[in-house]
Length: 276
Image (spheres, rainbow, N blue to C red):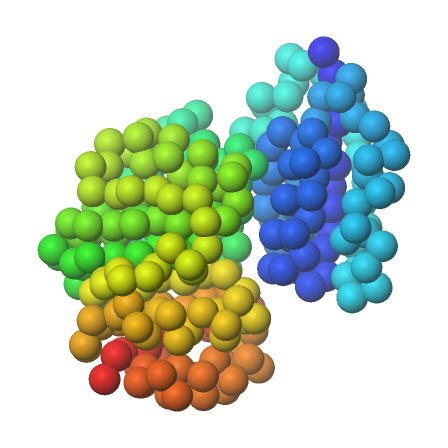
């Protein structure tokens, strides 16, 4: 069997990548690997239909600039190509995110994931910064929400840091299924994974909420996050650019969430807010 490896370059990167991966998944693509300009996508040559690619809605959307190229990969070389594309991630000297085929290294928190169709491998700036925030804050015995969980790595690190009740939610079915697999793979005992959106948050309460999504969804859901967050609880938000920090903070201020600080990486922001 022969695979096709597509190299998609996407502008704007965050939102476009998330939507395009979802559409390609519906078109039969099996695996994705993020990179600095977009992602690689893999599909069996026998399953590929050019008409499905041309009919993808995002490719005809003038708000996005998307280019791609592809090449054939023989079956015996597919795993090697995958392993070459997916590099382990280190966050400081304490945390490593790796695939099962990577050798473990001596770190406090070793997270093993099989990315498959999911978004959030740690390669993107926003996920990397959220991992930093988790490392820098106290999670012992906390209740935590990971909203838009992707591969589930933020929820997994939260448990490794001592959280005792964690709920991970994603609207995408592939993310939901992949998060369950990764939770099991890392022997987590305190994480429940749900498929859905912020409507699942009714009557919930958390000490810490983590939401790495995108600006528009965050703005819509900040009131719900505030309702669910305990007094003095922390809200970690990412998935937006530094020019959006003011509108994110203004929305938070309207809902009793005080800005506490942020990390910045290549114009992306991961901010922290505290419930007053």
